Image (tube, rainbow over all chains, first blue to last red):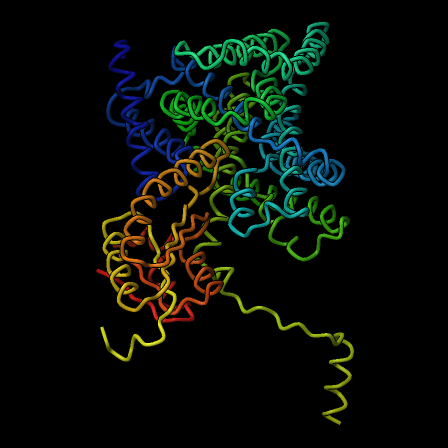
Length: 403
Length: 145
């Protein structure tokens, strides 16, 4: 298909269909777009054209890449800097445990159990090490824990976890050369001056019809992304960090964030998620479903084994079970970004990409389905009666009564 | 409305999602609250998309809050004209859970909600809100068709 507008109409039509499905089934648009991308690719190849959705067309790649960069920036900008100031120690320990557990565990399982080569195994570890900050935050808001010390620490830990993923993705697969050094030094300088510079710039030139704030942010994101690619790294690494350093300034500007969301959800992310879905090979998934099960089991097990002791070490016993379970959920954004990075750089095959994306979707969806289908609503569970007696005293009393 | 069955109804909780059924339920509840001099609580629950994704989740949250705040402005005016004591609340979460939790917290005498038809898949994935509320609520529940 060489007609650009016809191809564009097809993709935007699929995005529209995905948005409608998301509304009807009350699922996230990202998930809907990935699934629509997979199904559409399969159907088009089977019935219409061998090339499918032509996801590697240059302009589609550009829009999808920009979507990933802006989405990552927005995710970073949602950080609350105040949380880090008070909870950095607990957050670092739990967050790093949440990252290193599945990162090392899934890498080992991919290599030794599935017999994947070394580099694909590392990439699998990176893709499955993420945590969905939004899932954790949603439940915290629901239960009112977002304002508690415990909730704040866990939320900050999720950000640390995702920093680990982004840094690993940006550094592991790039050769360490003088370019890497230049990239790191320039990044540190930019991250240091950006909050101050942005505030001054927006104050002087912001609030105009020409949308100067959006252009400024896109310029910074593209420039740092370009530098990252030049250094052999990944453009989302600086995007996430820029989002975090600007969380206290841009992140607080609701009007600007809303305008960026319009750009992101209206045009960019549909191309990103549909493209990510279109590369999933359904025949490969059907050929070896056990691989999917192994990776899903590896992700859940390693996350639990790593996070639970870290949470317990900080004496967070009460609601710990709920939250370490939540931290097992994978963020669709970072999970698919990592997998796509691997596919684009030929680190993994299309079949391996399909298994990783399948696992990312499964670990995002299955906990939600289980919670909604089998568990009673949390507020309805009977409140435990406060008993001042210890367990041993109760047993002793019961034994005495029996005697 | 002098029926003895309504004696003692002092706090009515309306579950509101801005659907036509919920609008109808709200009209019924307003009328009942006016007749019985009961306090009216209107609860809007924003359901996050599942699984939640960072940017989209915050967008849904902001959008929901603004939307319900806009809807509540004329509602407050209607309640004021009818001299009904009104309290509105917008929260995030599973609708059935939050409705029951709110009813429990305010010690509601009656929950009024609209009936929404769902597909089998929707019910399996998310559960029917009215069914869950009917099953677990501590007080009478009125489903308005």
